[in-house]
Amino acid sequence: MSSVGITQFNIQMGDELTQNVQPLLHEIRHALAALLESGKTSSIDLRSIPLAPGEEEAIIEALGKGEINARLEALGPSDIYETRFAGVWLTSHYNEDHMIVSRFIEITELPAILRSQREDMATALETLNEELQKQATS
Amino acid sequence: MKKDLPLKDGNPQQGNPLGGTLGESLRSQGVSRRSFMKFCATTASMMALPPSMIPMIANALENARRPSVIWLSFQECTGCTESLTRAHTSTVESLIFDAISLDYHHTLQAASGHAAEAAREVAMEENFGNYLLVVDGSIPLDNPGYSTIAGISNLDMLTESAKGAAAIVAVGTCATYGGIPHANPNPTGAVSVKDIIKDKPIINVPGCPPIPVVITGVLAHYLTFGAIPELDHIGRPKVFYGQSIHDRCYRRPFYDKGQFAETFDDEGAKKGWCLYKLGCRGPTTYNACATTKWNNGTSFPIESGHPCIGCSEPDFWDGGGFYKALSLPTEDLSKTAVYAAAGAAAAGVAVSALNRGKKNASNKIHIKTTIDDLKKE
Image (tube, rainbow over all chains, first blue to last red; front, side, top):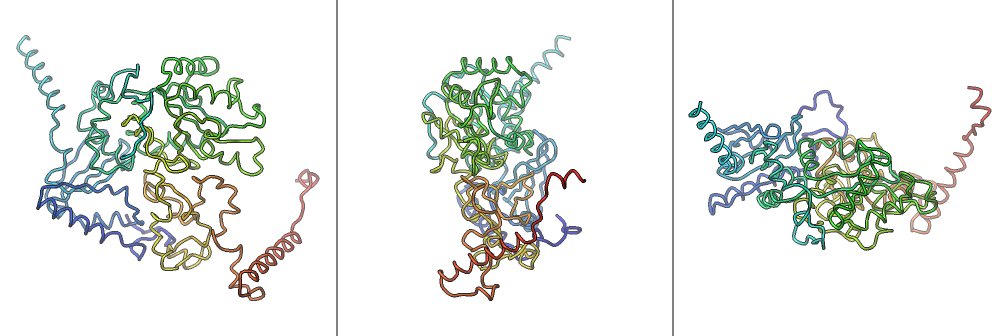
């Protein structure tokens, strides 16, 4: 988010509004340590935290981007990527108008939504069976 | 949700005669499990529940059945419906709406006149004891003629529709506390739903209007858990109204440091300092604006530089002026050397004299406009 063109009035960013970035990074650090030690996964809903203008961007910038970047197309797009800290993922869900609807920091080996889902696999098996049967009878 | 209040007969997951489960409905529409997981994650966020509850929400929503919803609009401006229908999470809201059977809403439904009223009566009869009644707007008690629908007074329609409701959701400050119609001098004798209905669980969702995701969050909660959420002492879901705007405000550190904007264009305002002295009602207002925010999570009034006006609190319109600080006199005495005085009594005299002076000055410059003046233009 750029402040270029925005009058520096009330909604400016990058100054001394509040300092939520550091505490949140510490929370992530604790969660990552727990994941390593006990396998306990965590998730932080960024929409539940009172962030000052620009702070969400600052947190995302501080986390950076890692090696994996996944794009999900389900009820609108979702961007899921591992941050530069292995085990710390950023999941951003958008609606079909590409407006963000929820954003989570997930501390896990792999976000659950990326795994193939059993119900979808069952449907896929049915579809594959039907298609093969059709081919066999035609 | 540790202390959800179970409904006696209103669990939409039990015995609702309408349709199959939400999971079946979504699958029949080709919605994948992964999409459903995304829906659940967003719903958890919407309900202000921790992400750790997503699997539980998924399981509950999978088996939830469509509850019938009857929506009544009384003395209102339709702002609450506008707020809901213009909600930014369109996909999720539409799924929530697909997951309920909205059987009556006179602004949104296609039917009108007798057909509309017939739809309400059929829904009430078929789902007696199980439907969810949503009400926006206050109810006039002085003269029923102030607000009627199909010739039926608001009072009669509410009492009749409430009889078979599992629970009532009062949406907006008018339905919850009387709102602007109830403001002094309350010409219509407006009252809230809770003033009339005493024998049903009522969830108050105040706000002028309420935040759209708070409205859908309450509906989603009912749909998910078949119960109403834990409420505060004036009937609001704690999950959304449990903390004050002040406590969750990103400008709170400035309050703690005593850094205030004194006017809307001074240095303090430009630096984003606390708006308390400009009348902010954040300390006495309980709502989710500071975290959920408005317009696709863009901002909320304080972030845009305006004090909170406390629209989700009872009698917010009669608070004595939106720009008067909660605990300060109408003028900053420290700047008024003539009236500078030590001690509360002296300060009270000073405020009174100052206000009297302002009134006199105002009267002097006031020019009355007559009908004749208007005709000249």
